[in-house]
Amino acid sequence: MNTFVIAEAGANHNRNFDQAKALIDVAKDARANTVKFQTYSSETLYCKNTPDFAGYKNINKLIKDIELPREWQKDLKKYCDDQNIEFMSTPFDEKAVEELVDIGVKRLKIAGFESTDFRFVEMVASAKLPLIISTGVGFKDKYLDKLLNICFKYTSDITLLHCNNAYPTPIDQADLNRITKLKQATKHRPNKVGFSDHTTSTIVPALAVANGASTIEKHFTLDRRLEGPDHPFALEPQELEEMISNIKDTEKAFINLPADQISESEKPFENARRSVVTKTKVKNGEAFTKHNITTKRPYYPELSIPASKFEFVLGSIAAKDYNEDEMI
Image (tube, rainbow, N blue to C red):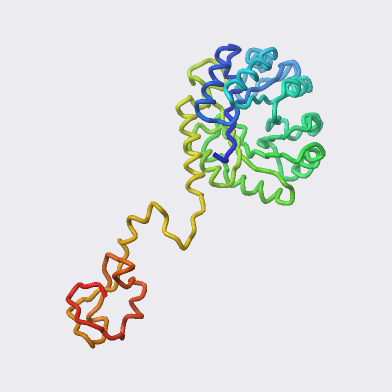
């Protein structure tokens, strides 16, 4: 599979280490490239007196209740290494960046809400690791040059993710055309474009790949009925497998085949094309006309003339006697 799939565990560990490991197992079994958590602290993420918004009440307590215990990161990274799946976590503060670099992550993610905080972007980029950056709410094309100028000072491996930050995202607001627009807007800079999907669909990510996405990020859970803000819109294990299978099928459907050759799957049906055949009996020396020849299946290259040559056969002279319905 060429598409880089990020299985986003997010906060769906519910601060249970065994549950976090089970999420890693699910991502591994689904054949995702990496499983990603999030490293934040309520104290550094939100102001103390943040008003309620988007249906969230007491956001500081909510974030505190779903923080990833930072002492887990090294052990989760080791468990991922043992399972042969890449460990990732999105950092939300300077300490998180340092911790993730120290345990040897291969790349860093910048969340969509942080992508216009250029002070923060530079702090993350300065780690000089490959970057995956979500765009999302409030992100405008006018920010692209500044964002990329900062990041390219430290790394040339940058992936921009189109993203709608509604949880969940209605399918009619996924705006997959934005992937193409991001490519066009940044065509003068060497970067990759992908899609961070918050719909509940297993098909939309495959459609994004068909539209040019090289990276897909998708939230998943062990069970949508579990307590927590990220479970209701996340894919369950079987759905994650289905999504990745859809992506693989999409990639296969775009494999280039020689336009002038019959594919292996079509070869058994090659003889189902039409040949030039007689409509009536034709005597030796008689001219072929529209009244005595037509086209019918089958076609055998060594025994018949293809229907595409019908106009060339008209007016030529029969070199033998033909019965009705005989290939010429």
